[in-house]
Amino acid sequence: MKLASGVAPVPDMLKHGVTVGLGTDGCASNNNLDLFQEMDTAAKLHKVHRLDPTVMNAETVLKMATCEGAKALGMGTSGGLPETRSEGRSHHPRPQQTASDAPLSRLFPI
Image 1 (cartoon, rainbow, N blue to C red):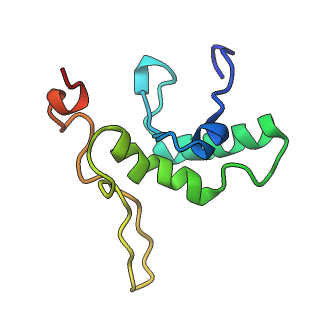
Image 2: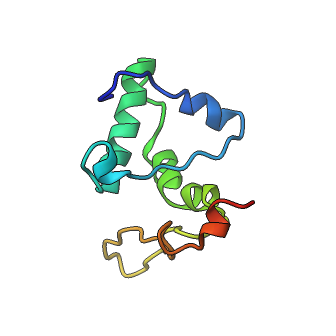
């Protein structure tokens, strides 16, 4: 949004089976490492862009920020998936391994 370079067609990409991960890039672009804010922005941006309040629901965006993000980084399909808590306590999703922890050979295979 900062560079006004357009909106990726994420809903269409998801419909066609493309793995889409959601993350942050920090100081390199928007000075933000808040993944929850990025999830909020992603959902709202596509709702406004498509003029459709049902596109990019919370479940879709959460999956993009957790298991789909892990899948996109080659960390498997369950890496980063939030655990279910039966006690009813609030639980924030925490990836089991971050991109900075993963060997570069896994992130950028030769």
